[in-house]
Length: 264
Ligand SMILES: [Zn+2]
Image 1 (cartoon, helix red, strand yellow):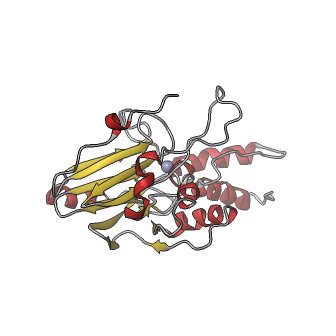
Image 2: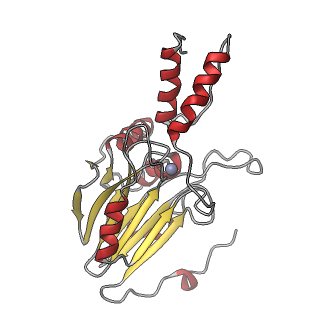
Image 3: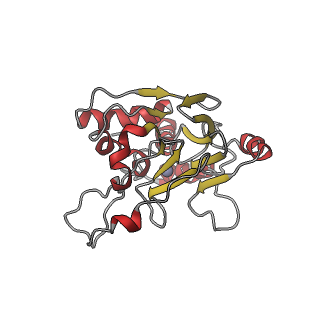
């Protein structure tokens, strides 16, 4: 790999009131989501995830976002907002904190709890946490943040509306349109509509299968299938799913309890 020529990569100076959005990963690939906002000389980061290597990348454990473009500006970072606890959104956080440990971390209770075990593993103890929930508003430097509930395949996911003096950006994180989620916490489309009326200047959104017409089947629609498999099986049942898909795990445990099965 050749190094990019600095003259070609140095971005032009931002005009006063200008907002620059710098994706450091996550576009055109599934993983290492990380977006940097640059306004009034201060940076805000949304997500800091890893990308898992593929078969043609033997010996590679993790692929990180490219911190290069912000490495000499880490002192300008106001906060790192984590939209949800999936690895491709939080997994690279310890590697960023190794370079500046006191970057304030903002996320929901579950997201920060999942991050916590990672930080311990990396022996990062002096970290700054801001626990938020839907409806909360927080100010970091020139950025005013508002958090909005979204449904996803992990609980406690949030979208974030980012207001600067000149623009309103809505970053949805990952989300799903399940109308009957197990925890009753649906994607807050009313909040999206309210922000729409206020005038969203930039809408950043990511939803797997967004290009497929129709709706994603409700998580609850799997219940009868699980029940049937559990009822018809006479021996041991092995269930595989994403470890972070807490609602799926809950469905399996419910089926096991209903049929008096032991869980290992
Ligand atoms: Zn996700």
